[in-house]
Image: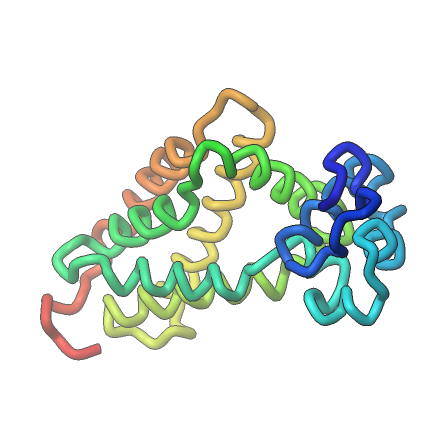
Length: 209
């Protein structure tokens, strides 16, 4: 097991063999040494494994920070699909995004550390573009299906872009205030965003997309 204070493997314990444990070790090293200064070799050594083993779990140091992002995107898609068709489009997005970002209390400090890295480390901010685009694409496609418009049309694209900006803004405010509640920030900001799209007509309930 990794020593949470140092990120190193304690003597006599098994070597790390899980993504979650590698994340914990990596985050401990990032906090102590800095993200840019920590190498894959540092993380592998602290975990008691080789570079090749590290790359079985993560394609890069950046991927370690993002964790199981692709799996989480699948969860967001499920949340959008599960919203009843009679719920207004922007309310549906607000409910899904809030639920997507709801975490048990013991996970919140860990998630805060992850998002501090993603939003504040320049190398990770640059890396976020493709991942955020995947998130935005789900929202854009949902809006396109609800409105009967093409996903590359002005309204779905605008709403998708604004939904992403709204989420990032909520996270920035949350990181700036340790007493803030993330779900409350998301609820407030997405409620305001919804007002700008109230007059966008949707397909009647039950209409095939």
